[in-house]
Length: 411
Image (tube, rainbow, N blue to C red; front, top):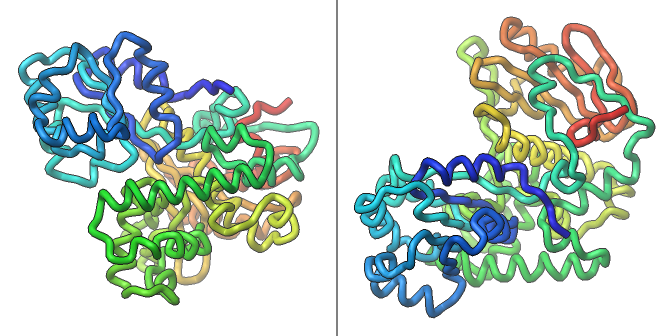
């Protein structure tokens, strides 16, 4: 099945005015498909998953780049960091827009020397797994409505069981095509195997590569929790320092993300530890060895998985939103918390809480009200996403909003 990627117009614009465009994101998120869709047969295509191309590029980087026939797509560029100085040289000799379209399954922005070589010459666009908007082919207008305070979506029915379907499915395109749970699980098992044997092995000299699946499982059990490396390390066969280094590597490969804490000089009682999220809930469920039926029985487990799902959906929508958004979480030492705080370029703030239940009470807004009281001039809305049918006002710009408003227009 073909999915329209909502980041595509941004990439098309970049190819018209920037010499090098990089699409990066987790392996199998759809980067190659999107690149080929963008340029068709107008570009020469090279993949560095081909060992022959890889060897040639590593052996003679400038000869490889200089020998390319016109504009080129270079797929999985992170496997050949040696090419970046040659790409810079080629661009400086002939600075034409859209000269190179690169894809990468690792964050080259974490490699300062590489990014310095392409400074002013490259636009980097992140492609995450599919959002529910893209899967459903629906409007993605949550942030515009949220910052304007005009969310009022109502639906004929709550999601109920369908919410568990969405969460367990995740957003990787290929397993979404598989209706059999065992076949989906087989895809994720192979995905993790490739990550360990190819991407992770190439990025680091790892003495404990076989332990990476266990580390990822430990991380999965801490999704939507404060980033506690010592806790994740417990029971693993290496020390905390090694665990931290490996977790940093998993971030670089887009498998986990950290959400920074909200900080304000006004409040010295804020918790300053980031939160951690697994990058996709399909992958998360595979790591937790759970499925839709088990999530429906174990709502304690579903709580953090749902929070990670909402976090992922909002990060995806932010990628193609018209301005840069910053994401935080809020927690203080009095145990008041807000799952997500989002700030726009004007400095306006919205708070977002996530609740699995189909009903909401005033007490569910206590964290939001605490945060709102500290920034009364900046908070333009507080939204508690729940599995209900109607948008309900709780006063002072606070609303309970059906989770499906993230991707559905309502009635």
